[in-house]
Length: 510
Image 1 (cartoon, rainbow, N blue to C red):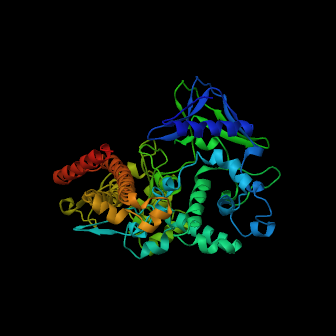
Image 2: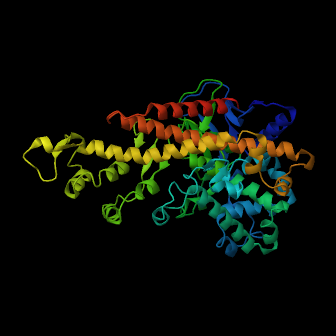
């Protein structure tokens, strides 16, 4: 199996990994190779053409890192009942490995991302100030989108009607794991909670490595746990496949281990990608530290925006009909725009209650309703009557209002982010404290350069995600407005196009 890399040290790392795989009887097809591509990192590429059904890799059960590899001298049966699997594996890698085990895993772990590959890109490790609106000169905007944390609306209603955001949930999960480890391993509790101590950052590194490189796995003879997060294994070699939303190969496992098999034909030189799950960009960013401009699973949850426009009575109707919540905006494709549940709620108050129930039962099509004459008292003199828009148009107008809220927030945040033009401004808001950077390995004499790099990367990631959100909203609005009377404001459209061009130019500069 060949390897290509950008330096002799990287060649050595890849050669050591292949030797590790060989020693652990991990089978890798001669038709693929592990390569390091500048700007992308490690990945798996074809050296020969592949056909559907070709096996690319087999990792035997003995080579997997699961809780069975954690000795009971480190974590007893009782301790295992009181700590999540994810936290246990991270703790074991941080302070439970014997010197022999450290040496044994070293060749594999050398291919893992560095600590800063996680802390610079995964937003739960960013300064807390970035999770609240930022005020810069005449701009006030959200740095991290409200789809991850915070709120799209200042309404008190949404606090009681929406679930926690993905970033908030991940942060709570991490903090729960840290405290669980500190509770069952009290000798390490102080260091784990101290950002000035190396074990704190070592645990963060290993926690992220487990989180981003694990595969679902249930040991032979065991029942699948209720929580899928409790069924995980680290698979040497398999963790080098990168993610796509449309994979051409699949993973399977049995009592003999894990397998990767091609499901489509590949030409020589193509990268072979896995699908980590049907994840939108907010999930990818929070879990793995990246987003994808083309992602069929991307979307925005509209619950708090939609629910903030409803009365208590309307919310009760939706709850009884099992249509309360789970309102989504989806990207291009067959289901582009608002989801069915969002369409349903947009007709609430547009149709009569009887008509609305018939609509959700599939017995009425509002799109076939013509506009009607209505004057409130049905006067015979039609000259005094007013024309009322059809239910379809009225429902779409409500959808437009909801999505325009997203678009306006995206534009405001993009304007604000672009206003942070100077490196000093970026550093002021986006970087960690000096002590945290030094604890992560930065040298004091290189702090300014480190800060500049960290600030630029984080700032760019925020611009990228807000641009994706803006495009989601814009595409949905264009689709909706095809059915609405023209009411576009040329000045507003020109301003939007100008901002879009500036954002594209910023991203193109790299």
